[in-house]
Image 1 (cartoon, rainbow, N blue to C red):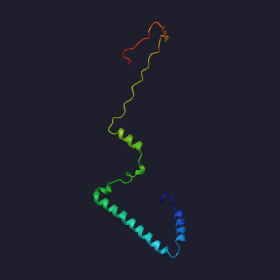
Image 2: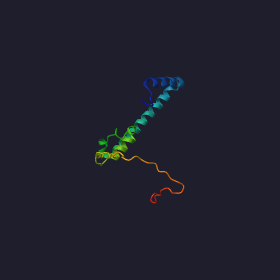
Image 3: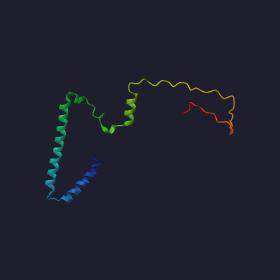
Image 4: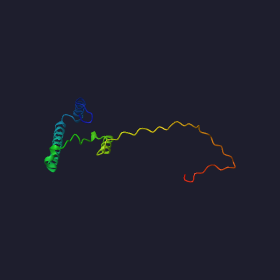
Length: 123
């Protein structure tokens, strides 16, 4: 139903309201509730009629369920936008496997008298 209220909960709320309002004020509040519901229904119908007039004959072609904000999924929207108008992904190239090293790595030792190697292109 509305706001997670079931029919039983609404009936309990109505019974409590009837006890709080009392029998002498109940008809007046029931009439006010009926007028409010009628005004809300008229407002919704007027809004629907105005939208139908503004949009024109395309109003019946609109898929309103597609525009429901509860179906908003940012991941899906981004995925569709990124994959739109793109070619299918190409097959990845075969990985290049380096041949095994035949010479073992040797550790260089430096002395205090010889400077370490310097790469002028590094930075």
